[in-house]
Image 1: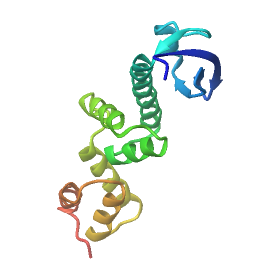
Image 2: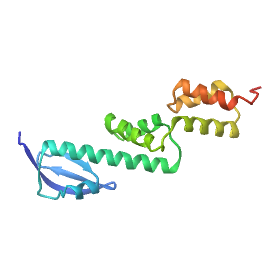
Image 3: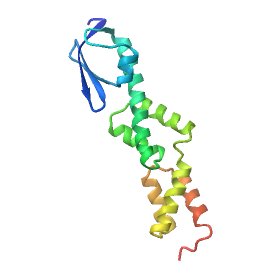
Image 4: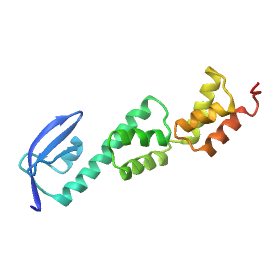
Length: 159
């Protein structure tokens, strides 16, 4: 197999670009990556470089997708992982993106759990078991769910 691949075509695909390579493989890259590495039709690229560029592009695309989701509403880290998995992002990239968002305090499971329980209690009063089950369905750990529910039900009589 050749060490270098040639870019045969570049086309738009859902806000990104799709490149077609000389071995008939296709890769989806962000436009920023395409410009950064000055990739264009006829450019030759090594397989190793292509994997590195694709990983960098996937990270940027996953980060943009998570930012889009978080701009609309709060998500738990598990929910975001599930969303990224459904979009076929690699687990390592998903974990790296979510860790970056956690460090930036854009994703916080504790905050999500408290907000979800407060909203449920305000709109549809429910018992402890229901609230914990609801949080678990949103990929919140049982310990965190129990803590959040206990804190918020502290001054409320369930009966």
